Length: 421
Image (cartoon, rainbow, N blue to C red; front, side, top):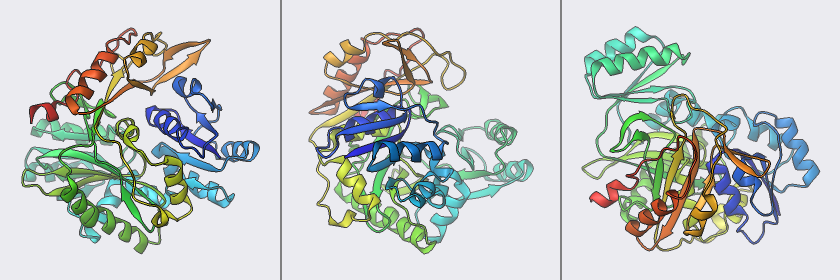
């Protein structure tokens, strides 16, 4: 079987890497891919843009590709699945209507309320002044969210009134026509990525991400500076609650809207100090870097599960199987990320890091005459798997210390919540 992975980040490298471990898969293509996918055995990058749906169809026809797996949210929100399905191509990823669950925070909030999904109190605004008046009335801390796609960085957790009001001005200045202002929830965030064929839904092991750029969870929000899985916060009982109280009711709410949702339903949750799971947001795709921590733990053939979702046969598969132990991913970023950063820096030490037992997933890289160069903000994800979290964390940092490029930056405290508990 041949698979096409659409995208060029660390998530897509991890998907291609894991799909090639499936016995059914003989070859993977990536559009456009990155420096890491370019070096995978039995994997080929093809320079087709994410938005070039006709070009992607042409590639599927030319290479006789059996399944398309869409990584990023942007092509999903633009309707790539609808386009491919019209050409009778099997695809893993929700339709444009389904992707609205990530593309519009206000739409997702309305869906949660209609389905009685536990979530934070919120209000939606299309003008700055009413939003500011609401914030003044509610007080801080408070959360301000852009309504559209923002690559994981459109959320401001404002601890002061000035910060909250400034966030309103900044988001409207960035041409987000709508903002959602939300109650601040206390607790720990977890990411639950669930696979669904639109009828049946199966959660993967839960992960925890580190969104903020600075150690101690400080500084600006990023796409994610590291992740670990499975999080002890989600034991079997909590997992059952999340499935019954959040995932299954959300799928039913999508069905009531006649949305045929085949792909990842990613629930960003807060586990409150009282042990209550509350929904912060939904995403329509695999998380990044959660995928780089979760997929190395999966025993079951990834291809088999994704194909079953595309064909609406998920209920016929046995339960997912997982490796024992713990997985930790540490992200190496470019200097200046998540703001301005330079590209084209030579990367060294990847082989040495791999020799220390880590798996290196490329995020923002490109291959130029057999040299790997930086080509994005989040450059590499260094993942280590071990019997316990302490060993996995030590192994990941032991490996990442081998990697060098000008301006390399990574948090030194990924997994601190685990170690401090």
